Length: 78
Image: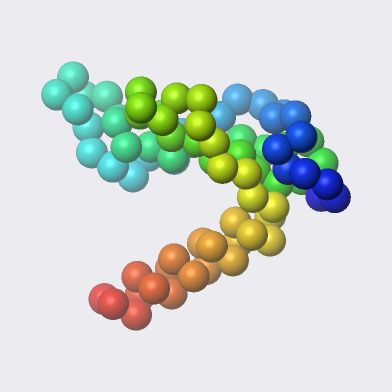
């Protein structure tokens, strides 16, 4: 992806990657949402009401490096 990721169109709906708890009604409340960007990259969002309309955009390399660092960090402390 060349250029500014924040200028890229989102190519489809956000998918919820839930990893948190549920609220008292049984709805997942702590989910990271993810959508692909036209031309490459990803938009990450937050499904909590306070996070509505906010997103972080990363290239495929950036999100992969983040995920690998996160796994390494959590594996090392286990």
